[in-house]
Structure formats: structure tokens, C-alpha cells
Image (cartoon, rainbow, N blue to C red):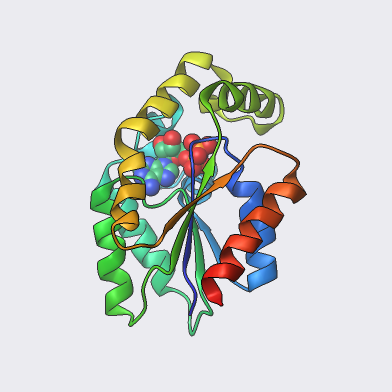
Length: 192
Ligand code: ADP
């Protein structure tokens, strides 16, 4: 199994790159943001419980997120590997992921962080807001606050995996295919 975490601030291109990487390397794409948005759309109990956090761009409480993620990962029979996008977002989530993978006899192999600066992030997300229909994309203050949450809580996850020698940074600025090539080169280097 090969398990990859695609990491980086909101709007850094994780979703776009995740689709391309999962196709090329035969991985299951698991985006906690997409899973939550699916629940919101269906107005499920879970959707109702997370809406107020998501609309404001705040992190959903760990016990809810971790339970959903564990259930999703355990639902696959004999997976070749996972690409996680939007998870883990803090150290507690990273620890719980390590435990889950350990119980399944596997591990995180690599974390790839897309490096994109705040002004580029704000401009990309405001542009995405024209079509995404996401409440958390519409308002510049909410976008900046999501970026601050990333800096304050989520970036520690990079250090957590860096200590295990598993974290790498990739320049996230440039054409989609150029960034994709950079990511693939780093994955192939790691695998060889
Ligand atoms: P983005 O990366 O553009 O901020 P996501 O789709 O990854 O968007 O996440 C959207 C929202 O979903 C987050 O702002 C948060 O409210 C919730 N969310 C997603 N993943 C997590 C997570 N791992 N922990 C807590 N909340 C999460």
C-alpha cells in the first residue's frame, strides 16, 4: 500500500492535483471537505452538525472528523492506497491517523505540501467563489481566517511528519501540469 497526504493551505490546489495523482498512482482520493459537503447537501444529521463550522471556515471538532474519516477508510476492501486531502489538519488528527493505519498494518508514506503564499490563496479562492457556491469562499475575511487557522494549527502537521522524515515541500505556483509534474517527481523519488 502507498499512502500519501496532500497538504497545503486552502486553495493551494489540493483537490485539482489529487484527482490527477489518484488516477496516475491508483489511489483512493479521500477529501474530508468533500465528505462534509456531501453531508451538507443531503442535509443529513452529520451535515447539520458541521454546517456552522464550515460556513465560517472553522475546523469541525476532531471527534466528528476522525470518526467520519475512520469509517470511510475502513470501508475499502484491499485498497492499493489512499491520498488524503484536507486531513490531518492538526496534530491530534495526525496521531489518530497513525493509529488507524497501524491497526490496518499500514502507515503514512509521504506528505507533500504545496507551497502557495497568502495573497495568491486569497485571489484563487475569490475566483473559485464565482463557481463553487461555497459560503466559505465568498468572503475575504473568512478566507483570511481559514489561512490563519492553517498557519496556527494545521502547519504543525508538517513538522509532525518532518520528524519522521516523511514531509516534503513542492512549489504550488505555476500551471496545473507543471505543479503536477513536480509532485510526480517527488513521489517517484520517494518510491525508488
Ligand atoms: P479548503 O482546503 O479549501 O479550506 P476543504 O474542502 O478541505 O477546503 O474544507 C472545507 C471545510 O471543511 C473546512 O474549513 C472545515 O470546516 C471542514 N474540514 C475539512 N476537513 C477538516 C478536518 N480535517 N478537520 C476539521 N474540519 C475540517
